[in-house]
Length: 388
Image 1 (cartoon, helix red, strand yellow):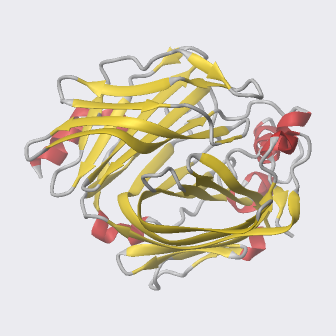
Image 2: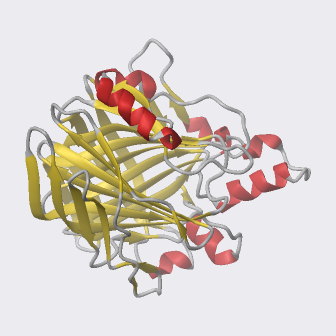
């Protein structure tokens, strides 16, 4: 397809490798590697118009665990550390945040016994199991089944991450593509000086999510049904540790019935900002990628615990007729290595077949700040609790 070839030639730094979403299950499989610092995670997002939904990620070689990162650094420095502690098979974790009208309603961040984790063998329908939770292929879509203890959701999590009694969060969600399109294996962070690469597959840029999320909170048992909520599935993997020279990584999502826009912004070496990139997927159209020609606003606000995050983020390319703006009123979930905000966004995308112009849509914005310290608060907050 000439349009795809033109994108690959225009964005050589992204290492685009086109895939058809109808064949995505085979490409969603785990990458086998024993390289120190390797990581992999699958991430599911779901959000309805009222700002209710979830973000769930299943991690192998937990890229944001300070203990795992410390072991990798010591192995590379030649210190006497068991080499298996720096491999992807050494750590596993689940991270789940449930949103209710844009606010955090339940959270689970747990470390898992790697012996309880596994992937279906080749030749069988793809699935990955982490503890009592799983993500599995079901027809052209996926089923996400979660059963995990709730962890604290307040500032006390900084001092002692702990399970809140016998409270649990469960979910049974069916994720189906709203349409099929071409997607890409692509680079999502700059290659590190030591040769580590970082890849990202937006396996399903636009999905319809149905099912129920249940958890036990202060008000007793709560249930959140999702009926045709808009969502996505992503697959991230890397051959070395995240964070060498990386300051912040912003990732935003905006959905509409026949499309989705994904924005990214990388900041390295404290204040060096790379060109923002916007990817647009739409039903019946070739994906579009554009470098932003407008610098996102730099004004920051601070949360109640003094964590800085932007007032707004804008991805825009006037030459390509794209503009997606996110307004961030408050953080929904936060830790020292990752924050998530349920945003209200405006969307303007011009295309050959249609123009999309929407206001006050629900969206998601993530800000990743890889931990660079092994100090006590970071270890206490970043490291998830044990699932046992």
